[in-house]
Structures are given as structure tokens and as C-alpha cells.
Amino acid sequence: MFTIRMGVPEMQEFWDDLLHRKKQGALGADEEELFSSKETTIRIT
Image (cartoon, rainbow, N blue to C red; front, side):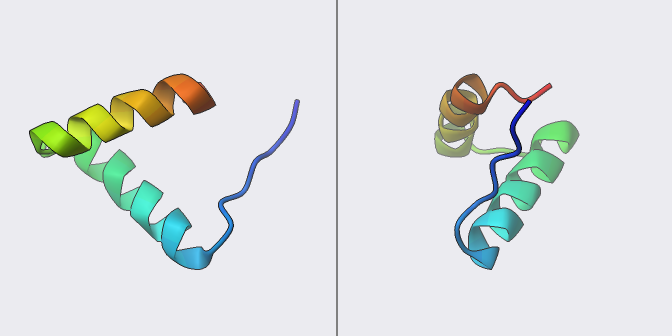
């Protein structure tokens, strides 16, 4: 299995924020679409 790391620290912070707000159900429609597309690509479990 591989570990893929985001290129810049800001990307990790951005993704962590998206993940946190997704778990709380606080994403906007555009953010939900972005999360869904990236989640499918990265296969977050």
C-alpha cells in the first residue's frame, strides 16, 4: 500500500478542514462536490 502526501502544508490543512467539516455535515454544495470527487479519486475510508 502507498501513502500519498499533499505537496504543500496548506493542502494538508485544507484537506483536514474538509474532512472535519464533512464529518460534521457542514460542507457547502461546492465543497461537497469537490470532496466527493477527491474522495473517489483517493479512496478515503
